[in-house]
Image (cartoon, rainbow, N blue to C red; front, side):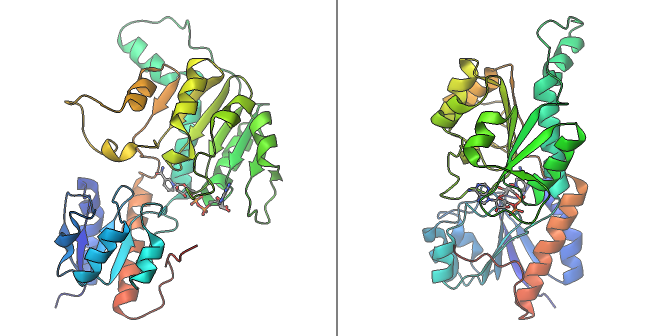
Length: 330
Ligand code: NAI
């Protein structure tokens, strides 16, 4: 007997590897769509109990209305962030939204550290030079992390681990979080963090309060040569302000796993196409910028946890148990 029927949007090969065997154990049937979920594709959910979505599916009010009409009973995010879902509209439609609040915070914090090390020591450039038999080290000078100050914005699961990693490098760690927990960290006001840090790493969610938390004014307040790392959400940074700071040399480098307008590009092979996003194109030309395609989460451990928690969330709905990972409107 088939249990829940799931319409799975924005499918990539690595999703099926983890979801398919596990869904069989649950007795669930998954229909994998390559399409992203949006108001045009929502009709594909007709006849399914649950839609399973990722970071770049657009679950707006119109999409939600269509899902409801199609008989969908739940929106299951297979990620932590939920800024792409209109949570109030879902609540109004009585359509529960669940997420995977944590799959591998270490994976993301470790990737942030990888970006920091690469941008600072220019490993991405050294790799290409040596492949071309260019053994010159001119222009590859970085700075010691030991003794510098790391500013961490958002000290939840990922930020806390990144703080530990930074401390391991011998850095002084400053933290800003409007809802600090009882943590042995040096919390300071945001302005102080911005003016005092040699590197700034973003680990807060994207909300109306954090949209463009890094803007023109804050860039100007930063130390000259600051390195900015963003593994959270692209729109935490005003890209125009970032570009301005990078081009005039005020910002020393940026490691970005996310980008404000990533939806049209990230996770897709666009190697045969022209990138029409001028800000992304410009970023990619700068030698002191390293962009990865929202891959910070992408470890075996995280993928396994994503599949397990997502299917467990769906199982809770099926069995009428409380939805532990329910997302509520703010
Ligand atoms: P979390 O919920 O454990 O921590 C977020 C922290 O941000 C909380 O301590 C919260 O109080 C704080 N915060 C809220 N508003 C803030 C503000 N205005 N200023 C500063 N801090 C604020 O979340 P977690 O697991 O640490 O994830 C953080 C973010 O990382 C997620 O929201 C998501 O956007 C991103 N992420 C990125 C992934 C990737 O692959 N690149 C994978 C997973 C998460």
